[in-house]
Structures are given as C-alpha cells and as structure tokens.
Length: 492
Ligand SMILES: Nc1ncnc2c1ncn2[C@@H]1O[C@H](COP(=O)(O)OP(=O)(O)O)[C@@H](O)[C@H]1O
Ligand SMILES: [Mg+2]
Image 1 (cartoon, rainbow, N blue to C red):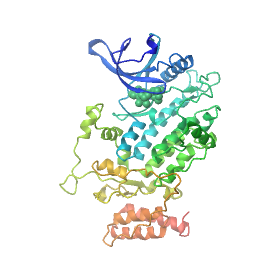
Image 2 (image 1 turned 120 degrees about the horizontal axis):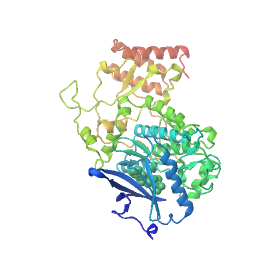
Image 3 (image 1 turned 60 degrees about the horizontal axis):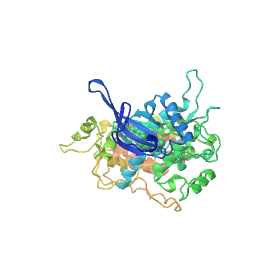
Image 4 (image 1 turned 30 degrees about the vertical axis):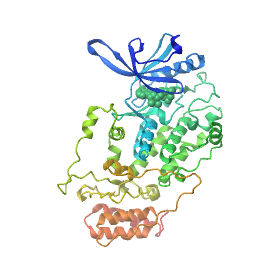
C-alpha cells in the first residue's frame, strides 16, 4: 500500500513531481517538488506528507488536515503560503510555497561550528517579522468577524525560516489549534510540540491561548541569545517539571553581556503565569524594536538579512544571482584616503529621542570590546546628525559583518549555569590628552553606563572644548547637565 512506503525522487502527486527531500520531521516528510505547465511554465514548491506510520493513525491524519485547513486561510508575508491540501493513493499532502533558505536552528548550528552565535541584531530582526506573522494569525477571524483564536503552538527555531532573498517565514502549523469552544482538535494532554518551547499551562494540560506562543518566542530568544535553554535537563520529564515550576535563571547568568533590557524582555515573555507575560505578540515586538533602536546602528538595522545569510551559507546553490551580485560589490572607497576601507561600524544612540526619564543608561550597554586589531575609520563629522553620536567600537557581530575576514569572538559566552555573573569590567582609563572629541565622548558614554555621571560629564565637557562646533556634543552635554541638576548630582 502506497501510504506505508516512503517517497523517492520522481514520485508524482498529480501535477507535482517530488525532487529531493528537504527534511524528515516528527510528523512529516518535506520535499522539494516542482510543477510544470504550458509554455515551459515551471515552479518549485514544497510538498509535505505525513510519515507513513502516522498516516495510519486517524488522530494524526485529522491533525494534518487541520494544519492545512487552518494555515491555508492565512495570507501574510511572514507565514508560509499554503496552496493545496491533497490526497493521492491514500496519502495526504500539503502543497506550499518553497522557502529557499535556512531555519534559525540551521543558522545557529552553522555559526556555532564557526565558534559564533547568531548576532543578536539579526535574531531580533527575524523575530520582529515572526511577531508580525503571529499577530496576524492570532487575530485572524472568520469572514463574519468571529475570531478563530488561532495559536501556532510550535514556535521554535526549527519552524522559523529566513530565505536567501531575505524574507522571514513561520512554517509548520502542524499542531496549530483554534481555541474557540467546540473547535479544539488536539487532546489537551497530548504533549505535541517540542517540550522545551511548551508553556507551563500547556504542560499542565490547561487551556492555552496566544500567550503560549509568546512564551515560546521568549524561549527561542533565551536559547539563541544565552546559548542554552531556560530549562535544560537530560530527561524530558525533568524539563517538563522545571517548566511547570517556572523558575528560570536570568539569561545573563549564561550571557553576562546581554543588555539588561533584553534580559527583562525575555524574562517577561517566559513568565510562568500567562497574565505576567506580554499579552499580545505586538507588545513584545514593540519592546524588541525599541531595544534595537537603542542598541544597534541604522546600518545593521537596514542591512539586508539575505546578505548575512548568504555570507554564512556562501556554499549554498540557492543564493539568487541578484543577491550574489550585491555581495560581490567591492567596498566603497574611503573618502579620506585612496585605500579601500570597509564601512565604519557605528552604533548610534539618538539620545535626543529619549526623554530624560528614559535615559536608563544601563539598558544600552556597550558591546564587548572588539579585537584590538580592528582599526576603525572615523566617520566625517559632517555625517553625524545633530544629537546623534556614534560609538565607534564595533560589537563583535558588527565587526564581523563589516569586516568579514575579522576573527570574531563568540557573542554568547558559554558559562556553567552555576556560575554567578562576572563582576562588572573596570572603568575605562582616561583617554590620552591628544584624544579627539569623539573618543572622549565615547568614553563618557561608557562611564554613563556605569553610572559615573560626574566623570562622564567632565569628559563630555572636554569633548565640547575640543570640538566647540559639534552641536551633538553640546546638546548631549546640556542634557546631562540638566539631568545632574535635577537629581542633585545623583541621577536615579
Ligand atoms: N515551505 C518550506 N520551504 C522550505 N523548507 C521547509 C518548508 N517547510 C518546512 N521546511 C523545512 O522542513 C522542516 C520540517 O517542516 P515542518 O513543516 O516543520 O514539519 P514537522 O511538522 O515535521 O516539524 C522545517 O524545519 C524546514 O527545515
Ligand atoms: Mg516543524
């Protein structure tokens, strides 16, 4: 019987011919396929079929059909497009859009082999898009306005894809469930989905809602930024017990360099009680975006995701020629010399956009010191917008992106969970007399993060003296002065 045999290249499902197997997951096989039409029409797509042994289980077949039925209604750039649910010779299949790219799990694994981690800016930008797709799915309503209350239930690094053209897609609605009364399809106690990303309420078999997806997003963030999951144990039951207990360590225990604000976002998302989490995905996304604006340079926030992916998987044949062409463009010549220099990595913080109350300086810590041999060209002062000052020390990931040949220290330090976070680094030494204003300003900013306001003020004052025509320095100095005045020299 066909349903009990696995597919092989050349197998056809009506118009679709399977080419190669992309993945074999817990429930299904995923195949690259193509469809041909008149006048040489050809399109690649993905065919997902149930694993043969599951195809005999009515519950599983129902779940599979449900995946397709629910997901096919959705139409969003960050959700994979479903073309058709079909059945051929007793075998159900889903035909869907082919995403030529890699999952966050694959990206993480590739980078790990090179001693690196996914750069936080890349991860946050990807998850921001995932949030958009998820919010759309959560809010999806019937034509008559009745909400479906859809929950994905399997948000994980395996189900988030970045394509070589830069699009971000959430795949696999395999265990998605409409939570509306009477629609529940999967048994409450069937622990479907990956254990580590399951919310406490799901583990306990309680009703779940969209906040379970928010929890899973938090786990994905935690894992890929801290290098370990919030709950890790050799046995599944132990993981589940820890999830229910709900006392994860702060991710900074594993990754001390993680910004406080990011750690707080993650901890909120993985709160044990759904009421303590973000209630909507867009709330999480807003906080992530706020953090990104504070933490990363416009250059990094605009860099095409496709470029990074193509750099990491430069051996892939799936990189479109258009992207390859862009990648092979030589770096722009420096304005100050005839030598080809890489683009200067800048990390801009627009303090002008922040009210004084917002200047929680500890929330935008400087990235760890980059390898000393990275000499970074200066940005001409004319390029610095008013009230924006650029920190010219690149983060390791920024350094890597802008200096592809540079050796890169891993963004995430592997630390045993038992170790407390290391003591804060010693305050930076005062710069040499001949240091230009920009360097003084950067040092001052570092001191601000260490709450050494008065010393920072002194450095900024000196920076202004050295570069009296720099309005950015003046404005920020005034702002700091005001902060000090208002707080009696001891800001909160
Ligand atoms: N539309 C797609 N395009 C490209 N690859 C895909 C697509 N859908 C899934 N994959 C790949 O196949 C894997 C398994 O697919 P998925 O739908 O998640 O199945 P499962 O239910 O077994 O987890 C994914 O992790 C991803 O690597
Ligand atoms: Mg999957």
